[in-house]
Amino acid sequence: MTQIFLATTNSAKLDRLRWLVDGLGLSTVTQSDLEIHVAPHIAEDGADFTENAKQKAVAWSRAAGNRLTLATDGGLEIPALGRSWDALRTRRNAGPESDGTEKIAHLLRLMRSLKGEARNSLWHEAIALAKDGSVLETWSDSGDGGKIVETYVPGASDTTAFWTECIRYYPAVGKLYRDLLPAQLEALDTVWPRLREQVQRYLRHYAATEGSSGI
Image 1 (tube, rainbow, N blue to C red):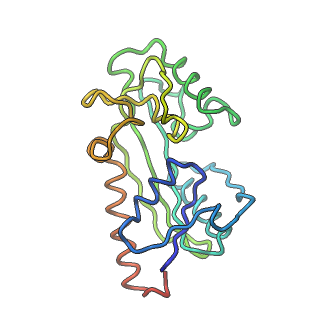
Image 2: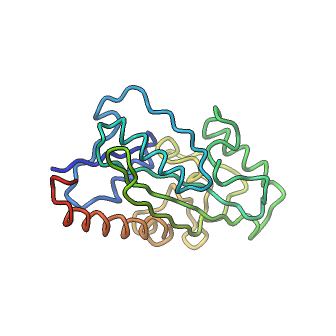
Protein backbone atom coordinates (compact mmCIF):
# COMPACT_ATOMS: atom_id res chain seq x y z
CA MET A 1 0.00 0.00 0.00
CA THR A 2 1.36 3.42 -0.98
CA GLN A 3 2.50 5.58 1.93
CA ILE A 4 1.89 9.27 2.50
CA PHE A 5 3.57 11.09 5.37
CA LEU A 6 1.39 13.46 7.42
CA ALA A 7 3.61 16.34 8.46
CA THR A 8 2.21 17.54 11.77
CA THR A 9 2.70 16.87 15.46
CA ASN A 10 -0.71 18.33 16.36
CA SER A 11 -3.29 15.61 17.01
CA ALA A 12 -6.21 17.69 15.73
CA LYS A 13 -4.40 18.53 12.48
CA LEU A 14 -3.31 14.90 12.16
CA ASP A 15 -6.94 13.79 12.17
CA ARG A 16 -7.73 16.41 9.53
CA LEU A 17 -4.89 15.33 7.25
CA ARG A 18 -5.96 11.69 7.58
CA TRP A 19 -9.48 12.75 6.63
CA LEU A 20 -8.16 14.58 3.56
CA VAL A 21 -6.80 11.36 2.05
CA ASP A 22 -9.33 8.91 3.47
CA GLY A 23 -10.70 6.54 0.84
CA LEU A 24 -7.76 6.84 -1.56
CA GLY A 25 -6.11 3.59 -0.53
CA LEU A 26 -3.06 5.32 0.91
CA SER A 27 -1.26 4.19 4.04
CA THR A 28 -0.70 7.21 6.29
CA VAL A 29 2.48 7.42 8.37
CA THR A 30 3.53 9.95 11.00
CA GLN A 31 6.62 11.15 12.80
CA SER A 32 6.15 8.57 15.56
CA ASP A 33 5.59 5.75 13.04
CA LEU A 34 8.95 6.49 11.41
CA GLU A 35 10.65 7.19 14.74
CA ILE A 36 11.84 10.62 13.65
CA HIS A 37 13.12 11.87 16.97
CA VAL A 38 14.21 15.34 15.88
CA ALA A 39 11.78 17.46 13.87
CA PRO A 40 13.32 19.51 11.05
CA HIS A 41 13.76 23.22 11.62
CA ILE A 42 11.11 25.17 9.73
CA ALA A 43 11.30 28.96 9.74
CA GLU A 44 7.59 29.51 8.91
CA ASP A 45 8.54 32.97 7.71
CA GLY A 46 6.64 32.85 4.42
CA ALA A 47 4.63 35.76 3.12
CA ASP A 48 1.43 33.72 3.33
CA PHE A 49 0.05 30.39 4.55
CA THR A 50 0.88 28.64 1.29
CA GLU A 51 4.56 29.53 1.59
CA ASN A 52 4.63 28.23 5.15
CA ALA A 53 2.88 25.00 4.13
CA LYS A 54 5.43 24.54 1.35
CA GLN A 55 8.30 24.98 3.81
CA LYS A 56 6.81 22.32 6.06
CA ALA A 57 6.11 19.86 3.23
CA VAL A 58 9.62 20.14 1.78
CA ALA A 59 11.43 19.87 5.14
CA TRP A 60 9.33 16.96 6.36
CA SER A 61 9.53 15.14 3.03
CA ARG A 62 13.31 15.10 3.37
CA ALA A 63 13.12 14.05 7.02
CA ALA A 64 10.69 11.25 6.13
CA GLY A 65 12.97 9.61 3.58
CA ASN A 66 11.70 11.63 0.62
CA ARG A 67 8.22 10.17 0.97
CA LEU A 68 5.11 11.74 -0.46
CA THR A 69 4.30 14.30 2.24
CA LEU A 70 1.24 16.36 3.09
CA ALA A 71 1.62 19.49 5.22
CA THR A 72 -0.68 22.29 6.28
CA ASP A 73 -0.54 25.80 7.66
CA GLY A 74 -3.50 27.84 8.79
CA GLY A 75 -4.51 30.79 10.87
CA LEU A 76 -7.31 32.80 12.39
CA GLU A 77 -8.10 36.25 11.01
CA ILE A 78 -10.10 38.72 13.09
CA PRO A 79 -10.82 41.73 10.87
CA ALA A 80 -11.88 43.99 13.76
CA LEU A 81 -8.45 43.69 15.40
CA GLY A 82 -6.63 45.08 12.37
CA ARG A 83 -2.87 45.16 12.76
CA SER A 84 -2.95 44.17 16.41
CA TRP A 85 -3.49 40.56 15.34
CA ASP A 86 -1.45 38.70 12.71
CA ALA A 87 -3.27 35.67 11.28
CA LEU A 88 0.05 34.27 10.01
CA ARG A 89 1.28 34.18 13.61
CA THR A 90 -1.85 32.66 15.16
CA ARG A 91 0.20 30.20 17.24
CA ARG A 92 2.84 32.78 18.17
CA ASN A 93 0.96 36.02 18.83
CA ALA A 94 1.07 35.35 22.58
CA GLY A 95 4.75 34.37 22.44
CA PRO A 96 6.59 31.35 21.01
CA GLU A 97 6.55 29.38 24.28
CA SER A 98 2.93 30.07 25.27
CA ASP A 99 0.53 27.17 25.76
CA GLY A 100 -3.06 26.95 24.56
CA THR A 101 -4.53 28.55 27.68
CA GLU A 102 -2.14 31.49 27.43
CA LYS A 103 -2.91 31.93 23.74
CA ILE A 104 -6.64 32.03 24.46
CA ALA A 105 -6.20 34.51 27.31
CA HIS A 106 -4.05 36.77 25.11
CA LEU A 107 -6.60 36.85 22.29
CA LEU A 108 -9.57 37.43 24.59
CA ARG A 109 -7.75 40.35 26.21
CA LEU A 110 -7.18 41.90 22.79
CA MET A 111 -10.90 41.51 22.03
CA ARG A 112 -12.35 42.52 25.39
CA SER A 113 -13.92 45.72 24.03
CA LEU A 114 -15.40 44.07 20.90
CA LYS A 115 -19.06 43.09 20.74
CA GLY A 116 -21.44 41.49 18.26
CA GLU A 117 -20.24 41.16 14.68
CA ALA A 118 -16.87 42.66 15.61
CA ARG A 119 -16.09 39.24 17.13
CA ASN A 120 -16.54 37.44 13.80
CA SER A 121 -13.51 35.62 12.42
CA LEU A 122 -12.23 33.96 9.27
CA TRP A 123 -10.15 30.81 9.00
CA HIS A 124 -7.43 30.42 6.36
CA GLU A 125 -5.85 27.08 5.51
CA ALA A 126 -3.19 26.06 3.02
CA ILE A 127 -2.09 22.55 2.05
CA ALA A 128 1.14 21.56 0.33
CA LEU A 129 2.17 18.22 -1.15
CA ALA A 130 5.84 17.38 -1.61
CA LYS A 131 7.99 14.43 -2.60
CA ASP A 132 11.76 14.02 -2.70
CA GLY A 133 12.07 17.44 -1.07
CA SER A 134 10.20 19.23 -3.87
CA VAL A 135 6.71 20.73 -3.92
CA LEU A 136 4.24 18.96 -6.19
CA GLU A 137 1.12 21.07 -5.60
CA THR A 138 -0.52 23.51 -3.19
CA TRP A 139 -4.09 24.43 -2.32
CA SER A 140 -5.60 27.13 -0.13
CA ASP A 141 -9.04 28.23 1.03
CA SER A 142 -10.74 30.56 3.50
CA GLY A 143 -14.12 30.61 5.22
CA ASP A 144 -16.21 31.45 8.25
CA GLY A 145 -14.18 31.00 11.43
CA GLY A 146 -17.11 31.50 13.76
CA LYS A 147 -17.62 34.12 16.45
CA ILE A 148 -14.95 34.42 19.13
CA VAL A 149 -16.48 33.91 22.57
CA GLU A 150 -16.11 36.54 25.28
CA THR A 151 -15.34 34.00 28.00
CA TYR A 152 -13.43 30.75 27.70
CA VAL A 153 -14.97 27.74 29.43
CA PRO A 154 -12.63 24.70 29.45
CA GLY A 155 -14.03 21.45 28.08
CA ALA A 156 -13.13 17.77 28.20
CA SER A 157 -12.03 17.72 24.55
CA ASP A 158 -9.63 20.66 24.88
CA THR A 159 -6.60 18.40 25.17
CA THR A 160 -7.17 17.04 21.66
CA ALA A 161 -8.52 20.21 20.03
CA PHE A 162 -6.44 22.98 18.50
CA TRP A 163 -6.68 25.94 20.89
CA THR A 164 -8.69 28.19 18.55
CA GLU A 165 -11.34 25.46 18.27
CA CYS A 166 -12.14 26.02 21.96
CA ILE A 167 -13.22 29.65 21.47
CA ARG A 168 -14.78 29.69 17.97
CA TYR A 169 -18.58 29.66 18.40
CA TYR A 170 -21.16 28.92 15.68
CA PRO A 171 -24.51 30.56 16.57
CA ALA A 172 -26.43 28.53 13.97
CA VAL A 173 -25.96 25.35 16.02
CA GLY A 174 -25.12 26.89 19.39
CA LYS A 175 -21.79 25.06 19.68
CA LEU A 176 -18.08 25.69 19.81
CA TYR A 177 -15.98 24.25 17.00
CA ARG A 178 -14.52 21.65 19.39
CA ASP A 179 -18.04 20.28 20.08
CA LEU A 180 -19.34 20.04 16.50
CA LEU A 181 -20.58 16.66 15.33
CA PRO A 182 -19.05 15.35 12.08
CA ALA A 183 -22.04 16.39 9.96
CA GLN A 184 -22.10 19.84 11.55
CA LEU A 185 -18.36 20.19 11.05
CA GLU A 186 -18.62 19.53 7.32
CA ALA A 187 -21.58 21.89 6.99
CA LEU A 188 -20.06 24.79 8.91
CA ASP A 189 -16.34 24.44 8.27
CA THR A 190 -16.48 24.59 4.48
CA VAL A 191 -12.74 25.20 4.15
CA TRP A 192 -11.62 21.64 4.81
CA PRO A 193 -14.29 19.90 2.65
CA ARG A 194 -13.34 22.11 -0.31
CA LEU A 195 -9.65 21.39 0.23
CA ARG A 196 -10.38 17.66 0.52
CA GLU A 197 -12.10 17.63 -2.85
CA GLN A 198 -9.11 19.34 -4.51
CA VAL A 199 -6.47 17.22 -2.79
CA GLN A 200 -8.22 13.96 -3.62
CA ARG A 201 -8.76 14.99 -7.24
CA TYR A 202 -5.05 15.72 -7.61
CA LEU A 203 -3.90 12.51 -5.92
CA ARG A 204 -6.18 10.37 -8.07
CA HIS A 205 -4.82 12.05 -11.21
CA TYR A 206 -1.26 11.75 -9.93
CA ALA A 207 -1.69 8.05 -9.25
CA ALA A 208 -3.18 7.47 -12.69
CA THR A 209 -0.39 9.43 -14.37
CA GLU A 210 2.59 8.19 -12.39
CA GLY A 211 1.38 4.72 -11.55
CA SER A 212 1.60 3.14 -8.10
CA SER A 213 5.39 3.09 -8.23
CA GLY A 214 5.37 6.83 -8.89
CA ILE A 215 3.55 7.59 -5.67
